[in-house]
Image (tube, rainbow, N blue to C red):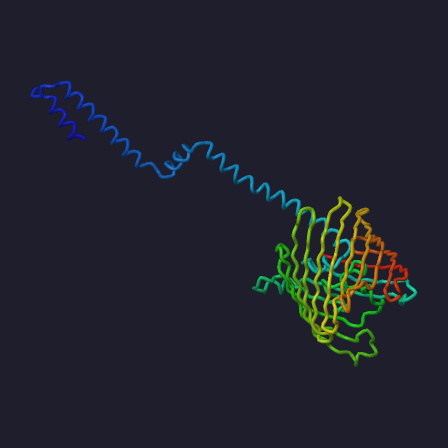
Length: 380
């Protein structure tokens, strides 16, 4: 810069004839030196400051548009998730209150159910029948597992071959979870099982589980323990839920193998529709196949759950059982009403259920039944 000033001072000497040109060149040199100083000072400013200046000149319309586009999607998703969670929460609450098989199979909590059932019917025994099943969460063992199947449970149950999820025999609301199937007489459990189950997290859309265990056959009579036998078994189950408009669909598929009866499979489809806050409609369709059975055992029911109070509910149900061979036919029609009441704390219930049965074996003649059940249900 000093060189430029010395040069311009020489240009202003008397040897120059055009004084106006000398002044103009002098002013231009000052302007150039000022710009050069400003640029050198600006280069020393931190990058964050320059970034802040750059962002400040973005047109407001662009910033607002991007913000709105990002905000719209979460609002829609959160609204759908809210409706889905409310629906699922209501249906899960109904299943938990009634102690359904879905609650037992898909809950990651510890569950204990103990039933005392008596059925008044001229064709079956009227004695009290005890049944139970328990599912104990094992967090210590769970923490040691490194696979994605991180929920570990210990299962204890009576008649494990009748407690098969997704089968018409062991999963009907008329008989309840692990209870005596409709088409079989009420009988004291003749076997008990213990198994270890692993399953994935309940946050996943797909629920997968697998268990392996041993069934103790003939343990109902203490005096005949020498004749007891051990029957190993394995069971797997997978289910998926999807909200389809106002209807929630759940498809469950199970495969099992018992050393005594061989392999089998069960498929079940539930369709839930929330009629109103106290009413839930459910359609259940299921089919079961066993190796020793040449046909499929079919089941269809239509159920309406009505919440009366915090401690009582009603179940209205129409059901049909059938077989696929030698030709598809209905083996029994059932109509029933079930009243369930919590009467002691949160874990003791009683049920009253008048039932109308129309079995094919009696040419669909009416057979009335009345069932009374006392149940202890823990879930934690």
